[in-house]
Image (cartoon, rainbow over all chains, first blue to last red; front, top):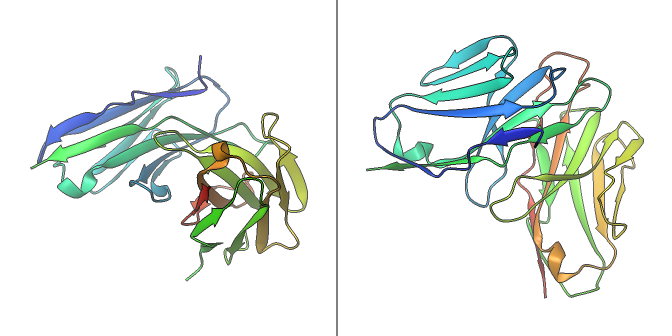
Length: 111
Length: 115
């Protein structure tokens, strides 16, 4: 089993739709969780950090379920500019300073 | 603005010709990372430094070396690039992960082409 797993998609959704991505992680001792957005041929950019049960930033909501070991990202009112790959990243337990990446979920918002 | 800078943004080299990629940061972060990313794949960690302590991933080829002469700079040396080393190379930094808000910050990447 991979340490961090995501559905690779692609998710093709119309403008204005709500879309949700899930990410599961295998190490129950993981402490920090992040969603990054990566555009084609660009670097990953931090979208949201998830430190407790979840948080919201405008149209984006991230949730953490420690019991089931998954993180979700909800995007409401999708825009064309939301088209990108969304990477789930988990900080490995303290002492190793490593971040484990999922393979990413590709989103395409259609006009 | 505090940031992570990578140079060059695009590098073309010949098969077997050594190449050095550079990364600098103004964030004063303890940890610096080098990742290799190929098309449609997740970034793959090559190695990282916590201050001057070097940590190599078990599956990083010997062909890849790194130097961190001071807090701000980190270099990736590819001693004998092969065609399979063509990729985007990403540098990232983070604060001490023992602290809160330990996000990684990425540079814009160097795209390496091997002819």
